[in-house]
Amino acid sequence: MSDRSCLSIVLAAGLGTRMRSSMPKVMHEIGNLPLVGHVLKALSASGVKETAVVVGPDMPELEKTVANLSEGAQCFTQVDRLGTAHAALAAREVLEEEHDDVLILFGDTPLITTDMISEVLGALAAGADLVVVGFETANPFGYGRLLMKGEQLLAIREEKDASDEEREVTFCNSGIMGFAGSKVLALLDQIGNDTANGEYYLTDAVELANASGLKVVAVNAPEEDLQGINTRAQLSDCEAVFQQRKRLEAMARGVTLQDPASVYFSHDTRIAQDVVVEPNVVFGPGVRIETGSRIRAFSHLEGAVVGAESQIGPYARLRPGTNLEGNNRVGNFVEMKNAAVEKGAKVNHLSYVGDASVGARTNIGAGTITCNYDGFNKHKTEIGSDCFVGSNSTLVAPVTLGDGAFIAAGSTITKAVSENALAVGRSRQSELEGRANVLRSRFKAQKQSK
Ligand code: UD1
Ligand code: CA
Image 1 (tube, protein in one colour):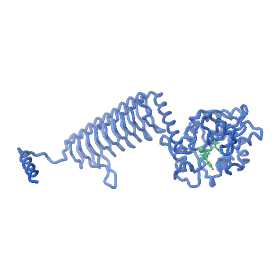
Image 2 (cartoon, rainbow, N blue to C red):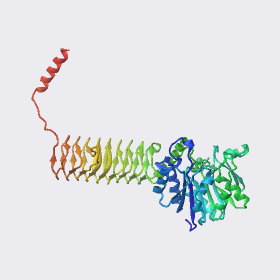
Image 3 (spheres, rainbow, N blue to C red):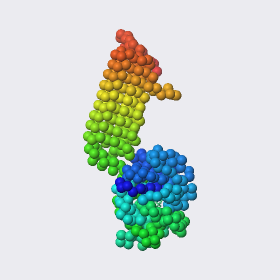
């Protein structure tokens, strides 16, 4: 990053009518991150420090999301939605400050890369007054077309305003524009609304800049990275591109994906080298997997840390707050939530471990349930190290098992168990000799008498 100052404005006030949703368009998610979050992430990864987000007047949840995702970002409200140029001017207050470069981007174009942002900033630093990121596409429908003359970009023509000849152009506007900070406000203020639908088009800045003799250029970036989202179908297209990127990234970093197309990532999934991921695994937000672990088929993880050399699944569900220190086994049909599990502990089959701590090397038998909820409050189960919890035990929280405790199978544990004690919380087995035959004769007689 050079020492030039840069302001970015992310336009996100559009209603997204074509999404048919009660939610603002840019709140829809890809890789479990709102679209606007992807744009903010790319900007901060490019070293852009000052960001304004233009939101609609009725979008409090969007403002909250922006505040959560990016500390420095400031929201501005566009009261009437009169087009992209009008939207950019909602941030007039920051546009009036001095910046070397001003980037204007759309919140509905989430796959942009740091490479293309640096290319725009590079072109501005090299003397361009206005830079537009374009892409070549076989399906230009709906995009503004870039009308070039040699290196100079003469105009951007919106679909609705284009002539038949202009519609043939396949070089399109991505919506990412870079302006020389000294020129931007004058250009935006000149834009009128003499357009097909009476909107103020940001894209008109190009013709106006040409009329003032300014240098206007286009940079060409891959279509895949510049897809805009107007519909649910386009949302799923972008999700597919995003997932494919994540899969390739993971494999490039030394992760084995046995069937990449069936593994789904979140924007923040972190998987270390030499982890093996079997087919049909879903990583929700906030997952970290450390080296040497294996995530077996059909597992679902979210907000969980899996320490090194662990084995999860098949069919395991790790929910938020699960923290496995390493060398752990979590087997089929085990659900864990808010559980701190120390090294070497195992929960191999059919258990629920929630709001719990499990000490090192402890073995939790099949069908063990921590009863953490009484209908009103959540309570903790604290299990020490080197414990053995027999199958089908219910641990009624709040409850503590001391180190080395041994719980007999089928126990219901309601009181603390001391270190190295054996706890049996079930009725004792009794036996009546020969009684089975007596019962059989009785039942047989009942059946015959019917
Ligand atoms: C826009 C571009 C088009 C480009 C395409 C790329 C214009 C006039 N057209 O068209 O050249 O090819 O994006 O995807 O710029 N917005 C506001 N306030 C408004 C209107 C829009 O904030 O009053 C925001 C939207 O939330 C959205 C972005 O601006 O994030 C783009 O608006 P949209 O209506 O989707 O523009 P397109 O028709 O896709
Ligand atoms: Ca759009």
